[in-house]
Length: 155
Image (cartoon, rainbow, N blue to C red; front, side):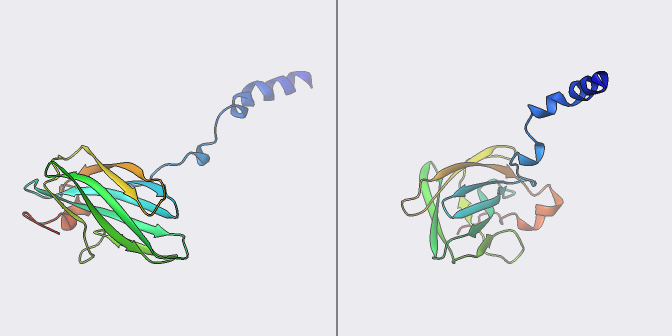
């Protein structure tokens, strides 16, 4: 009996000290995400145009607020700090660039390359913002080939 108890404790004792893998937050896709106040940023990816002169910022904004939120995204473009603001309706989802024909957020002259991490700062109102390091991909991945911004694109 004592031997059986020692065997059970010895073979399972370390699981009392380790974090359950199901409790570890991760992004199950190519993009990254974060939470800014009442807004979730999901699956953010920067797709580089073939000429390398622009990126399309693919992402989904999810609001859990009961009011419209204007989310500002700040980034480096053309050697200067630029920003874009998008509205998210109460308790809804706004998607940008994830499907052909969907509105895109185009950043001209991002000075980045495939494989890099492109910093984008998300903020609204007086809520503390979050900088997200967005992976830069190109059209070589089949699932993104039709979503790459055209050469010389501008917002």
